[in-house]
Amino acid sequence: MDFRHTEEQKMWLDTLDRFMEKEVGREYTRKHDASRQFPEEIYYKVAEEGWLGMLLPEDLGGMGLDPVMYAIFCEKIAKFSLDTAACFMQMIFTANNLATHGTKEQQEKYIPSFLKGDQRFAISISEPNAGSDAAAASTKAVLDGDHWVINGAKMWCSGAHHKNTTIVLMARTSQERYDGLTTILVPNDTPGLEIRKLDTIVRKSLGTTQCFYDNVRVPVANTLGKVGDGWNVIGKHLQLERMSLAASYVGNARTALDDTIRYTKDRKQFGKSLSSFQVIKHRIAENEYELAAARLLVYNAATMLARGEHALKEVSMAKVFAVDTAFKVAFNGMQAMGGYGQMPEFDMERYFREAKHGMVGGGANEIQRSIIAKEMGI
Image 1 (cartoon, rainbow, N blue to C red):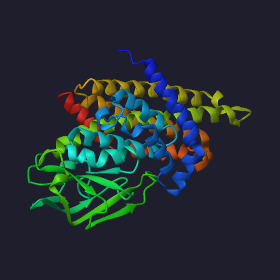
Image 2 (cartoon, rainbow, N blue to C red; image 1 turned 90 degrees about the vertical axis):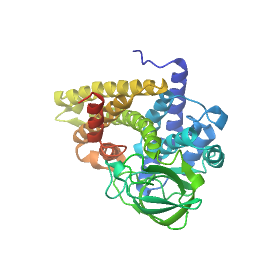
Image 3 (cartoon, rainbow, N blue to C red; image 1 turned 180 degrees about the horizontal axis):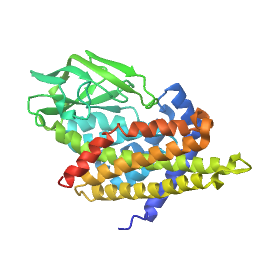
Image 4 (cartoon, rainbow, N blue to C red; image 1 turned 120 degrees about the horizontal axis):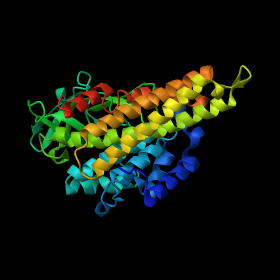
């Protein structure tokens, strides 16, 4: 299979490269990582370019791009930071879910303001006692007339605290394990909803939160998809999310490896550059071919999604291998840089932190391996 980019895709790559160098850059990324601030200026510039709607159909004001073009975006937008990339990726694939499963009224309410950069989204699946076992969710939504009344607690709801954010909540509406889950849109300023920001070593710009629902009332009209179909609504979203995560880790690992190469060429020890030592050469060479393999897995998965093919196994393979490769690249970079690798101004420690997070975020790598095995029939 030929995964070489078309001329249109190459132009898209070049456009994104120029944008990242001009508008983002290393200093901006370091500043927002240290200050834990959402990249508002960059977010609105992405909105002005029309890129927030890249996956949305043209009749909803979007660009109508396919998952391959989206993978290219994710690879490039993560060039300096996976956290910065997450600020965009989460919004884009959640809006796509709204376009797929939302009613006309929901689309008219949320999508125009989303395309302007004003409307934000957060996804709320995990709970204190239901992480990888997401179907064990116990946060309940009970019908009361024409409203849902929601009670429970959710964990790791990234970006839920930001202004004008609507939470895409997966809640239990009946006792069936899978068919008892429903997806509901909950504005983050709804009475009874308490949001606490969590202090973590990653997701500093986007941020992650714990959400408490105490008799939170939202209209039944806020149901996303059918009642009892929340597992499928979220499941379709997760394939696109995991593919985009894999692409972003490939993009960030490329920067980390390039930083390692540059540092080891410049750094002199024992009278010669670090890159002249065989152990360093071999680590870099190994990272290079693993990164190339990860990228092929990503674009294979993206191509299958673009064709509408069943790609659950391929998406999981791409996610696992891309994240593991990114972690190895950052780990080797940290080792090569010694003490300097642990300093924020050298960026490698951020690559390392963010790569470690990828082993858990978006579906733990152990769960991805179980999915792969199940798809293989074992």
